[in-house]
Length: 215
Image 1 (spheres, rainbow, N blue to C red):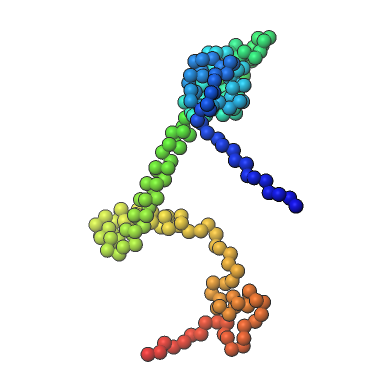
Image 2 (image 1 turned 30 degrees about the vertical axis):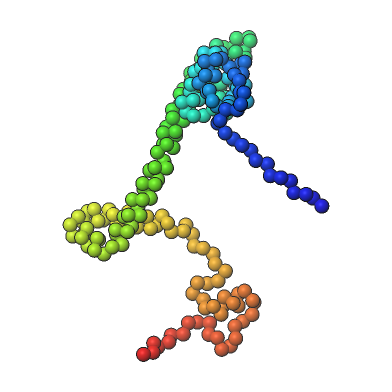
């Protein structure tokens, strides 16, 4: 009999580990910028392939965009000129056009990271305020007294608010109709037939009777 294995949990945290010391490949100035954080192994290995000055510039960029991942560090390494890399003992020079393009890519990547961080910082607040405003507008436009007063005094505002209310109602509707095991217009007898596979008794009508209301 196979025994169930205990679940494995992976803990990811930016908190510094006890006794975490500066890697010998990283200069003190660059390591001071990430004090209190644990660098991934790929990031440390990538920074080790740069000169101390380039390590400082790269670490400063990574801290500015709050991204210390190994992939981002390797992208910055690809844009590093050979003169600022310590892993090329033969001193090979990159093609000037390639260096210019890589430097342009680095600036664009950093700018994109900064813009994404700026948008992310305001996204939750903007979304909350938008949902709150939409709920108020929907409530107003469902009040006959409010809509009558708006259309009589500020018709242009009423038209815009009515459009927003309809857009809010459309946003909360399901994207596609829900598939039900029975037809919503069917009687309970038909739904019982679908579950049991048998027809309802002859005395039960499958359609709703048009009854005359009694006094």
